[in-house]
Image (cartoon, one colour):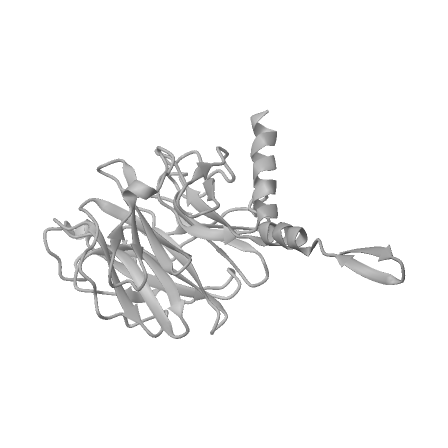
Length: 316
């Protein structure tokens, strides 16, 4: 605000409009999309967007895989805790690996030493641990990690091989140092992978997942009043065959469900106001070629600026 003296009167020339516009712009959220490129040995990439529809690759590896026999990062999931720390989990191997990768960062640039957490340690016949996802339960003040694993001959199956008959499991942690023993999270009666928990309102949660059975291999949702379930009221499969890796973000009154349409080698997207009706908006989005599925989260403009500087400093 600027004060101009005219005679004995004070005329306030308000420049608040411009100040407010600047303030709103500086505080506006930026969407980040965790990513990797095949063959997944390079490491974590990040895309960014200001509108949640059009994405740009920062073209930088932010963390290189160092744990697990395969030394890969697939399905990277990031969740920021209430203390501001970003937590990252990822798939470290296709088969014969029952652990997941973990690292943390305060700025998404500098990362802690990587850990390999053997989440299925109590299941000696488990085949894998795929696509871990993080969810922060603000009510219980704890992190829920979900993933898909196959334990052969444990569950009924259809056409799937016993080593590809997945169910969902979970563990809980408050500090990423101690973890509860893995428990069954969801057995919907069919092979299922790629879970993501979404809080849509107080006491209302949606689980978005991939039906991994033959011939489906597409996306559906279910509902619960608790992030740990039980989940009921399963939807119809609402994406094309050969779609996986769903991730969800909200813009305005709508939710966007991005997914990897891997046979078509592109990304699809469904828009929904309620997770009951779905509109295909794949023609309205743009995702860089080669991007593989991760999760979407929000940061501020300052964080994005620092990420761009970090990417530029290694490019030069």
